[in-house]
Image (cartoon, rainbow, N blue to C red; front, top):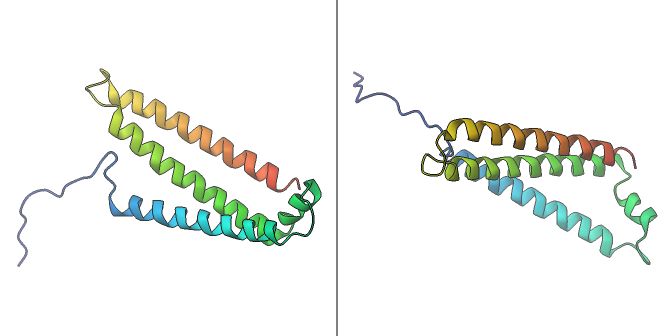
Length: 127
């Protein structure tokens, strides 16, 4: 026998809870691990590091894929953080129509992040 104690709560806004918390931690850990990988490659490179050595670190296909995965993680990490800022701080207390302003800010943020992803693809596969 099932008893309904009211309507199911719909979560809107920045309260996405554990999913976003976990996404921030996982993407942060991936970025930290990538930093250690690049740092190790820089440390174990013989001699001074110029353009050729730096480009050589990112020349292999596996490193390009790993770097792009980290860039996507960074963009998602940034999106979750920026979205939460817009949801938390653009309220009725500050502006008369917060939903419209948040929508505009969300669209601007998404366009900027997608542009950054496109730029990253272009930069990575140009090496």
